[in-house]
Length: 487
Image (tube, rainbow, N blue to C red; front, top):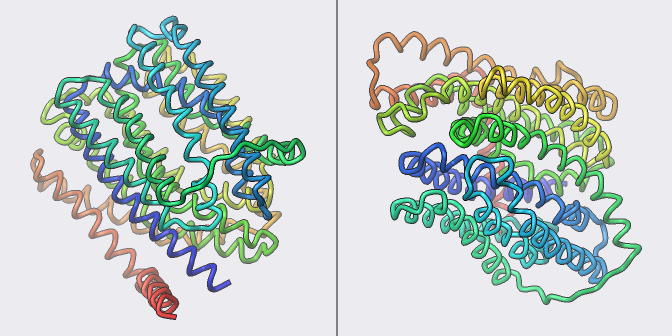
């Protein structure tokens, strides 16, 4: 068990390094693109991605997770999964290409058709990375998995900046996205070459679909929850409104999204190893919650405290171009904090084989959001949509927690004991920054001062009240990893 713990920590470390690099690449590119592109450009790409991301669910149907989760995987199972994935990719590409002209019926920019057609190529590209990615994930070999991820991020970010500076408008994002996907597939196949073969076993296919089917439906509903807002905003308000909302949502959920990629993608295969040990599962869940809230909450709170300066000086380049998104941005930062607290629960459910409960939760929250989305958009604009999305997502906690209480004996007091230092430290930082605002003028330099004050003040205060607990544990784990490496 200690070996698994060390391996998990090492994988999280590799993922962390990868995602820190990807975050800075993505954030840097996003800042430059926000200065070069218009809200309408962002709106075109955002609306196109709704169609692409929706149909991407049908290009997998949970097959990837089913292959990764399977206890014993031979060539028959692996290549049955690949054959299914390949067929789905071709079919979905053809469907998207044929249906792309219909997008013009819902959107106020005729460029949407060609953008969707170009992005649909990614469905075919992704099939060629299926085999090596599944095998590396099953091996928990995240040291190698980060290489294609970083390669893709470098190409995507770098090319999008170059094309934007050359005046390619929204095409800078689209073409860079395709180029990044190609690089990722080429690199992962170079690192872990796997011979491509086609096999199909009906029995194994049905087993994969039983596990993956619920995940697919849950993922489909999650997608609707995450993208129905974009669709309705694009249809009712138009490309400019969607562009403003996209900036607010992307930055508001960026940190929680990166944390998910860093931690939770590692936890699913790891938690599955001790799915029958509920005590260990509970301890691991609470420890993960403690670590990710320590990082995730302060980043969003810091941006919340400096949100106006961020939109004006960083994204707007000293202009008010993005200021109409201010309130929406602030609401989405709160949404990002809620996501940070909630997302570890999904890995516990999957480890326990409770994909049906995850599906049920998403159906309920999705129904709540979709039933109110159109009137809220029409009468309250993007700010109203941001509030609705936040409330809808929060419902998951009230649905899922009773199950955790019953299955792994999780109590509210358990959660509070692990997140209490984070909450207390955030209150301290909010009070500190609010007090010092009166002594700072409105400038880029003052914005940077507030960022530094928030981060350093939080880290020092948190560690002071916890007697440097996280630092000591991290140091101990690093020491164990070094000893294991030497051995």
